[in-house]
Image (cartoon, rainbow, N blue to C red; front, side, top):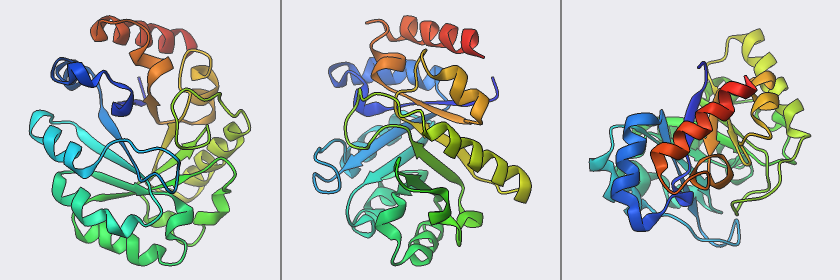
Length: 223
């Protein structure tokens, strides 16, 4: 496969975190961790403390998605907890994007930026060359299980074409409703990292290894 799979840990069974993390360590490429503050989105999920707790128990890249109003309040605690990617939303860093990018980089972390469905790629124009990853939200942020927004395929294609034209290094990541109904279109558009959650992985089977096998079968059929 020429794409990476990143399970969303907010969708895992936290009552079985040790067993599920053992499966993901064997099979996933990276792990996606959502930090929500209850303000930028009306939900609260995981935290820097959660990152600190799982860091010793996984060798995988920890990709942290900041759905928060003030990302600079979180960057240092998240870096110290063991994150590898730190990814705020574009709108939340508009006033000081270069300072935020430099801060994340100075902490030895990779820099990602997240685009909401209604946020155009042009929003990143002046610093797109500095990014290691761009996440395209294909649902509105804040809650799992929302329907896919098909208009986002054009945005993914635009990022793919810009990357090819300018030899940019960013990964194109997809967050939202990555499942059997969308894999084909996402892969064709240029997706490189698929964040899988409830519909794509965790709800496919109560046994996570079996669920992973079903997910891979869905992806192969879609390719």
